[in-house]
View 1 (cartoon, rainbow, N blue to C red):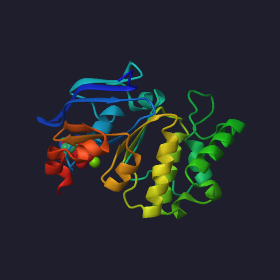
View 2 (cartoon, rainbow, N blue to C red):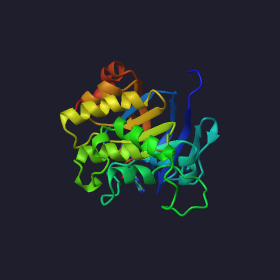
View 3 (cartoon, protein in one colour):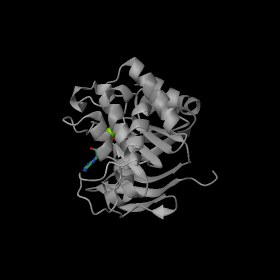
View 4 (cartoon, rainbow, N blue to C red):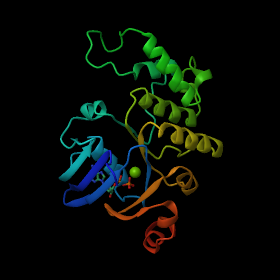
Length: 245
Ligand code: ADP
Ligand code: MG
């Protein structure tokens, strides 16, 4: 592997002696779509919590573009270029699609108040580009609360894209989506990974097959198998603990 953008080594988190993530190594390349699968309780969500700084590691390192992330506050990890989407969408239901995207534009340290920033051509341009990408170009003036479940998921991905993260992490993004929405989401992820790396946790194997460059199988906080979809699918240990059920 040439020079991975994300290097996770010996990562461990212990909750009262229980290791939810246990001496884990993970290397993700630039422009790679990595899918993480594994049974419930395997430590998948906890791994994302550790990378985005929501949970503190007990041991190990997380390097993103050679910068150590362990110990950094969540907002600093966002500023370093890591965006993370949780399982349930956290959009502003009372704001329009446009406004949801607009408030997600990174403002850095400015003299303006949190919401009273200038509506520069820059912001408008990016809102429109992102809206196009997430299939909501014609819904910019729609109140977010009126969108379908799938569209809300896309909007939240769009809110992350507004910050132009170099690593995008998504926890079960197609749960509850229709077949057509899943296909559109697969296309969306293929497009966005042209400019960045993506880590996706997913259970839908059809979707995984569609999007994954490589698959990592987690089990009891450890990497059980890793490689192409084809390779992990035929791994007897993976069939035993996950795919066979
Ligand atoms: P997955 O996303 O793979 O289903 P999780 O990462 O959510 O699994 O959970 C892994 C294990 O860690 C589970 O047994 C879960 O109960 C436990 N766990 C997760 N977060 C905490 C926490 N804050 N305190 C105690 N146990 C936790
Ligand atoms: Mg989970």
